[in-house]
Amino acid sequence: MTLDSGFIVVFAIAAAVTAAAAAGVRAAMLSLGIFVAPRPDRWHRSPTPTYGGVAILAGVLVALLGVPGGLEPLLPLLAVGAALFVAGWYDDVAPMSALAKMVSSLAVAAFFVLTLTTFRATPWQASMIVLAIVWFGFIDNAINLLDNMDGLAAGVSAIAATAMAVVFHDELGPAAWLLAALGGALAGFLVWNRHPAKIFMGNCGSFAIGGILAASSTLAVARAGTATAAAAAALILAVPIFDTTFVVLLRRLAGRSTTRGNIDHTSHRLVSAGFSEPKAVTILYLAGAGGAVIAYLIRSSPTVGWPLAAAFVIATLMFVLYLARVPAYAGQDFQALQHAPFAPLLSDLTFRWHAGEVLLDLALIATCYYAAYRIRFDGDAFVNFLPSFSVSLPAILGCQLAALYLSGLYSRIWSTFGLHDLSTVLRGVAGGLVLSVLSVTYIYKFERFSRSVFLIDAVLLTVAILATRSSFRILGRIAARNSPQRRRVAIYGAGTLGQLLARELQANPTWALNPVVFIDDERQKRSRRIVGVPVRGSLADLERVIRSQSVDEVLLSSPAINGRVEARVREVCAALNIPVRRLYVDIR
Image (cartoon, rainbow, N blue to C red):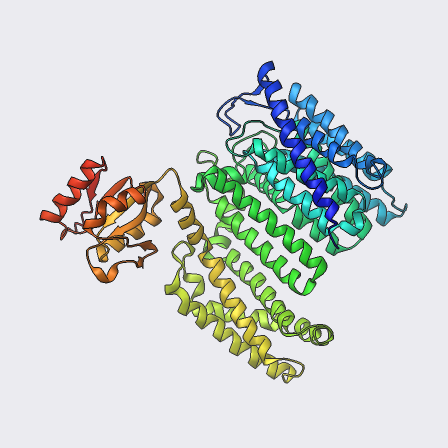
């Protein structure tokens, strides 16, 4: 699977043409007064020109004019894009219902799958045809739904198109040229569509792009005919798949319509959690790129790719759990679930019996144990030792789960999980290691087992448990540090009370204060990080630190900070128009 240098040329031409064409389309829309007006269920806040899809398709077509073999081999995919462009244009002019959009995409999907691809008429192939049509319709509408924040659909689709051209180069043949051109056109469109967007692609653009990606992935998987190819396609399109599934599920749990638009998508929840718009979009870009890299690896190097794919799925599930906790429905989140007849049972499973944590640990234990075999053995050796993995997995799952339970891991709270819980994790993993070795020694006499596999497994499982358990706290910290809604605070005094104050500010979002720096007069604390917050200077450096760290407020952390020191702090802050407050601790 090599990428011809001609693809780079096609990518560059498409990018340049689209960037220039988007400027022309934008100017035309401005002169005609065609805008997308702000609405309560849409994210943008100012009227923005639309129909950028015209520029994207123009860039694609111009870039394809000189490709080897001409446009004839690409006509089926171009027909899909053209048909859905027309459907999207109609929706832009006279908005269609969600049902009408779905029917439109499924009709095009049926035409493409049944007429433009080759399937044998067997019951198995017939079921695959139906599945392919459903997949096509889902992906097309997922790309349309993903167009909910500046630069998001364009960037994610550019990554997906380019990755699909690389990963499925052999299966797609000439169609890979079209994907390279689409990736370049979307990259050029981002010149105008990134935050703050100066033009939108419109439904004509998102439907056409989604259709080309859906048709290309359907064609690639059908020609490859393997589960690995299907997994690779899903990983490449992981972001739109995840976003659509997540939104539909959360809307149902809130008792809301799944087809009515709202600002409750993955990107919106990231902003609500504290990330800025560009950073929320960048996070989803990275997720899309990560899925694309893993898709390439599971086809080119399965030994590395499959364990990474399992880790990617687990990380995605953790991301789902984190974002699901971000309110989006004015206090009605999970309302439908709370009114369900099985709600008490679900509550017990979740909070009393820790079913979610146990299921997560089952997945972690199995994945790490398999990864240990993959790391330890290669080629024929892996094939020879794989039966040992299969027969021993149930015993390993039981031993390690029992050890984790006995260690007290399930009594720990995720939101406060940190290094102070490391001993609990090490105790649980070490206990599981000992029990696992004893069990396979007793049951299988340790024949065809490797001691190093169990050591590698212990290291991987320790890292996995620490990463998953601390993920909520880490994501919360990152979001808090980047949140434009939180005021940036300098804490004067990095002693015990200062550390207590910093921890409380980090953990309590209702205060909307973000500790970004400590000021302390003790020399030994300089240039250190305390509870994750850097110490940047003393009283003499106060004005410089306030300016360099863009501090909005100064908090005095201790009663010992008074007299001349307090007077000087208030004097400097008054000159900079920065408020000063003091922490009071009162035990009655």
